[in-house]
Image (cartoon, rainbow, N blue to C red; front, side, top):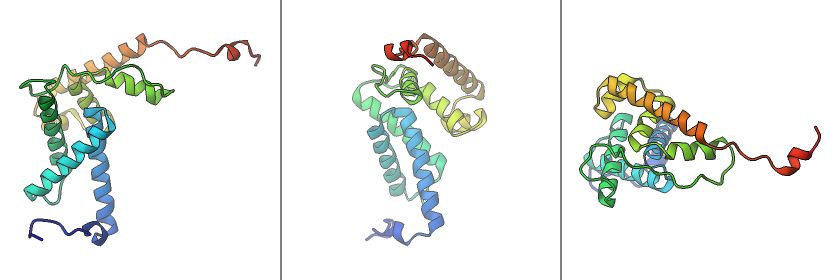
Length: 181
């Protein structure tokens, strides 16, 4: 074992507090990767690759900012490799939604609507609404001006409202229509 590598049972020897912090960091990284990739397995791969990359650099302890930045860069690299985008800093034109999901309810609808947004808009919306970052903090994370961040978030919210308004309401089964209250 080299000096830079971690022991195989490092998680077992760590304290409960460290394990909790690790799990929280990994979950935040996964949610962020999922907001970018919009696919469960791709998000897992992004987090794992980012974690390994940061470990190889000797970046211990790993902090949220460096993890998010590494996940974002790996996501952009993966899109370039797939030939989806070419030499763009943000994969703006990539839409990841196909047909609406068969999963009923808000979660299925929300997944579908978020999949209709561009990856960059989805990323900013996630950082602002889910992780609770301010526009200034997001600006520091993604390297864009605060005003641009604010307008992009506003545009993404407007687009979600527009898409939700266009979506047809769920059909009421015939039995429910004829049943008396």
